[in-house]
Length: 443
Ligand SMILES: *[C@@H]1O[C@H](CO)[C@@H](O)[C@H](O)[C@H]1NC(C)=O
Ligand SMILES: *[C@@H]1O[C@H](CO)[C@@H](O)[C@H](O)[C@H]1NC(C)=O
Ligand SMILES: *[C@@H]1O[C@H](CO)[C@@H](O)[C@H](O)[C@H]1NC(C)=O
Image (cartoon, rainbow, N blue to C red):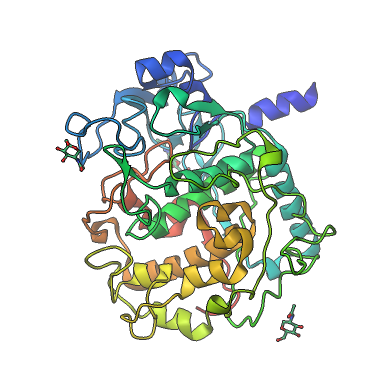
């Protein structure tokens, strides 16, 4: 009884998608996502927390001009909802029942800045706590969110919203953002997506980590937990891949049965074709286990170095035309890992991409890579480098470029998060979002 009360308090509301309350047949039919808060009013409007309003973000392609079926994530979230909650002041969440990142308390008037530490800086107890929180997130059904599943994206009447655990919702958001974009019933360049190969890349992943961090805070009631990161500079192999940390593996890539993530199934794995969304959701037996093979790929058998990171940070332009994986002398494209950091021009796999492919297994299948918790540690470090760059060059929403990548415009919502965060607004110092990074090794 006592436990239930605590859980219902802890799990009330927050972020990302799809809010369960907005996927009822009525809500979908009305295209409205303004659920009631505790006071019974939509978006807590009677308590002054927010209001239900028409979506007014910039829309590059208006639904009227684009023949159906087009990609359901374009003009996010207009395909699903014409109105959503707009929250006032420090309130946030899909029904304004939550606080903005960095704010806490019933009235969201307490601020807190969590420190994200390098994983080797955690005490034994902190490390155990982190692993047990992850295990809890991997096994606790999300009360607030459901995920979208279909074997056939061309037919809307096959779409289903299904349950997932909190960690799996996090994994799914990444997977969903990366599915090939469908225009006029055909798929455009499969490398184009909403989270990569464009100016949205650093901010999109920043939001993903904030989502998981806050979900874990709410789940456990531990407001002080910050997700750790892994500063992989200077590593010659995955020294963290032992059973005390992230798990060792055999030659086939199977994780040791004595390691923390040995039993983890990779959510949305097993059906890697473009016309589907996670059709195995809810059927664990159809998914593969999280696996790895660090250093096993001769095309990616090293980890980016101290020098690579130092060189990455010398590029002053946040991003440059054509704002995709061919952009040269672009901090974003070098950090993402399509260009050699030292000269800013030679196309090679480096930085973010290199570490993914170096790890092999689940981490090297980028759409489902978020299933391996190393993803969280790796992106924590990528975000730390992004943060150092922001502070060095006065990162500012104003410098976020206009560009032609779908869903990556400055005034488009980072896709597919709820509520809307404009891509450009993620280009601000991390203290605006309630966290900082430990120093660990100088950057
Ligand atoms: C938001 O939180 C800050 C910091 O605690 C507080 O000073 C401010 O009054 C809050 N804003 C609103 C609108 O409640
Ligand atoms: C989709 O098809 C219509 C009609 O054939 C065409 O006018 C339109 O330009 C196409 N849109 C895109 C984005 O290719
Ligand atoms: C990783 O590298 C260290 C030092 O370079 C070495 O001692 C260790 O045996 C290596 N571990 C693996 C698993 O190869």
